[in-house]
Image 1 (tube, rainbow, N blue to C red):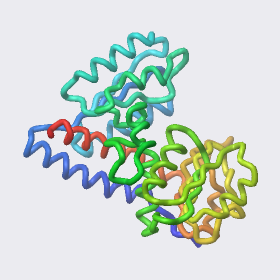
Image 2: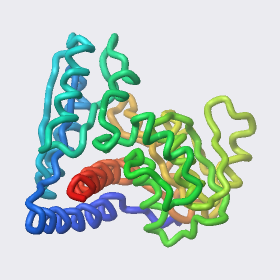
Image 3: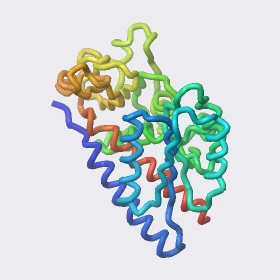
Length: 288
């Protein structure tokens, strides 16, 4: 039976440490880290997520702004708002909640965010620095939050990443690709698989560390998991009965894996914790 990795507990430890850092920054430098979250349209899930981030900021002592724009906001208006936030001294991190409603172009909007305030780690400058980093100490100041959280969860199990076989199922720029880069920076031997990968089962079975971010419910079954492997399930899929499940068949997989994240309660809390961490790091950098 696998050890269940408690993402809520790991995230809370990170957030408790950040709260102490924020208090120190306020006392010694008179600086309060600030995060602005921009939500365009009425996506219910996005609205819940933005509210969760605002609540987490409040608990950590971080100043937060929630900016809601209608779905028919012109791209020029959104870009101008980003430019205003880039110049706002109270704001150290800018979050553009994705997905943006069409016809807004996500790539264009994200490019307008100041790389020094890109706490999501999605700006081409920061993604380029992530790609060019050979070692962990060469990483850019901000890396995408969900993959960074995955690394923290793997390390929380006491697993040595260096030298092991890691497989990432999924190739998105939000999770799959940056997760592979972070594992490489930790000196793992990394294979990236995806929906068109042949013999996916055999490839997954080679993984000492398996990160699944394919967006397909219960794609990875118990027979695809190497006994004793660390399994990080990034997927969140709502079934017809309303139940949330991951990209891994959790009930069967936990009988084979050495450690595994549940859905919910695994990777999700870590994304917010790493967002707060990036925001505090940005404030500290601005303070010199």
